[in-house]
Image 1 (cartoon, rainbow, N blue to C red):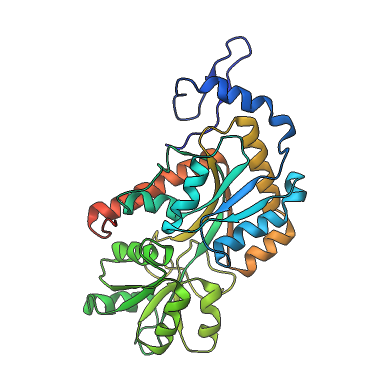
Image 2: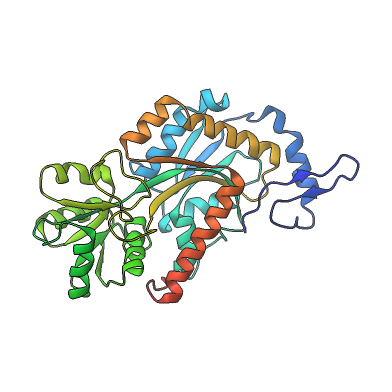
Length: 338
């Protein structure tokens, strides 16, 4: 499971306690030394590794926080894009870094799903990271080509059941949020659909607009203009609450699939073993940045629903997300990838 930072039990005993796990032998001195230097943290600009290319929503999430870092942390923050292997290359850099709080990573749903979907991942998401803060969730919106004779989620489900494996959808690739959202929907509704992976959702949208694809689970910011122009029809959003960008579109749960919720979540993680004082400083700084009017406004413009979680809650959330993808693999809805 996630390694949550240790706390000193008492000055007399000098024992460390961990939340939810046992301290490994040899960690006491390393943690103690890190904690001793936490008063002045940060003494240099922390690095925030984004495991995806510049220009995407993950990059936006990170840079909006980094721009507010001087006010939130009293220090600048460097954003470094290290894309590759569905996010695993950048996160592996974080997992291997010293646990001093100066190398952090932007984690998304891929941190949980990749460890389940891929046969070889260089880290364990529940062992090799410290959960710092969950930032928020980006919901998807189910959009269909206007030629599809459906105007509700229930009609969409009924059509998919009548035409198994015929309705084609695009995604930004195997194991990405736009793929996993549909697989989760299929599992919840007992439907079968045809997946066509692309390198990005931007590449898939033209085929959806032309009718070569019948539907997609896309970000509201991408879908809003084609929906308003009548080139696509929005059926529902996948989050637990409606999107501010498409406020008139119901949620999937409201539309007859009780309890359904999916979003591409994002959070900040560090390497395993970050001390409690440094972790507390990091969490407070990011929470302060998220609470700033500038960051709130910029996130809202992109349809990002701020949903903060403290380290313990975020670690539990990650465990539950890993378990969700494990269930889908065991049920046969998702196949292992090389």
